[in-house]
Image 1 (cartoon, rainbow, N blue to C red):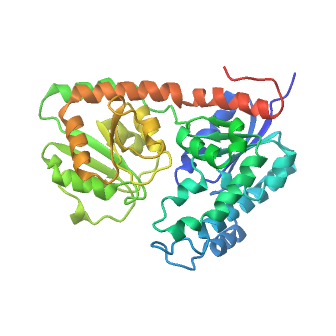
Image 2 (spheres, one colour):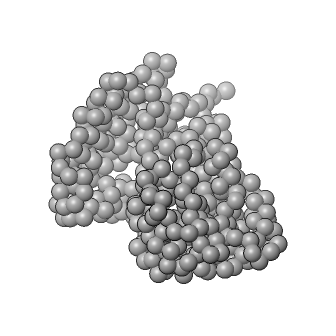
Image 3 (cartoon, rainbow, N blue to C red):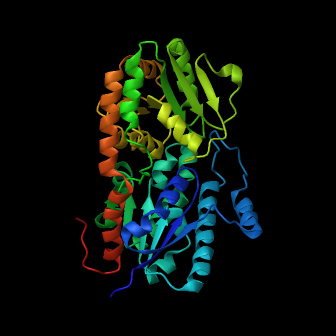
Length: 391
């Protein structure tokens, strides 16, 4: 009997990527592989921390026209590549790997030679060129050029590339057309850890009495980037505190007096803890009017919880939220449109149920672990040279 392929799953472990790392731990059995998981944000030695500090030091202001002119973003990604290289060497003392799965491309930055020996799948949620578009000046965008060049080296060395969205794939294919044949779109996986009965529970809760307050939920660490200030303005402008409540889950420093009526700031909540799940269960609407987002796993979590979501029509977000089908989309920074979207969902329990039910069904088909595994497992075998095709 053929033994299971030995696969090293390397995850950069920063920001939302850590959520993916946690889900991937559960996928080894589903995919029938012998998995080794390497989270580059965990188990850092003193030496690792010193190198990270040196390569992440700033020589220019953190924002404005001069941001990243010191190539800090490239240096940070080189550090992740070197850290991945060291961790892979240590893991290989217990035996080699048949396939490397590197998420994101930064984990491959210093591993191109290794990728020539061991077939690799590089997983991305954005390209460096797309990331550069957030810079506020032409000089800032130019400063991403080393990353763009390095991305190309990595993508050409990969046997396969997994993009979490069509949005990221389009830019990759436009920049590196010679890589187009090996790009596969597989949305981020989301844990199947939410009770589908919550939808009926919410509907019963909202229908018992007209005075029941609708609960909105926001979850986002980087409050300004995730549109938190826009949400507070919309909540205040719409006077929603008179008939609804809003839980803002963040550790970002927000002054208590800045929160309008009906808003509660929730701090120190650990993802997938009992308290975290209870917030999702009690919510009727999820809202995160993000200004910058490559993907937005939290929108998938909202869908898995059976919630209609309000998001912004940017980047890959419309691939997760279907406007007026599973949620509502507004332009980024448009507070008036956000007020209208909030009012639409707060005013209609039937609409919330319709959109939330559809969101749950859609994410179940697109992004639950079994679906992700059914697409990634054949790809793992195919890069090894086996004649295996996705069903």
